[in-house]
Image (tube, rainbow, N blue to C red; front, side, top):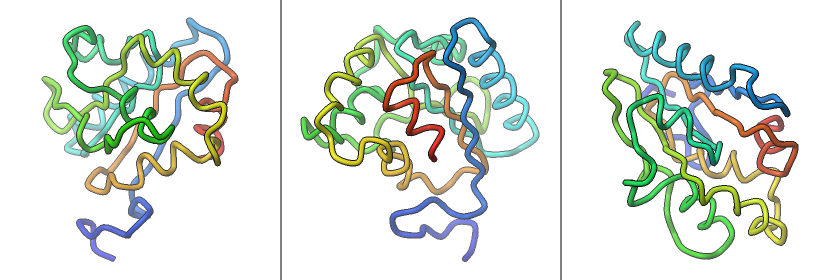
Length: 157
């Protein structure tokens, strides 16, 4: 399978997905995710950061004010809870760093866990969300300091 071919329902096998997770805050998840993502992008790798933290620190670190967003990862989560249809590809933004993109977060994401309680297969939502992303060398997932379903989904992925 060529690098630009899409495998229906799954990411390309050569895309590397790395989650930055820890149940505690202040452990360097944001710093590590953004720094490593930026370094890889500067080496010419195509990198996407998916900010799943409602504090949106990775989003802010990349120069994006979450209060100005029309859509964010929250809208994508809502679509998997049956509230709308927002594919992750529609929320991805460019950053000031060439080759580095972000699926930004916002504070409303904090209510996602409540909405996901009745969602089937919630442990696999992340895999479903990013299955349409196929033109990246790396996907970096910035987790919130939680041990809830969306966090578990990042570990399972």
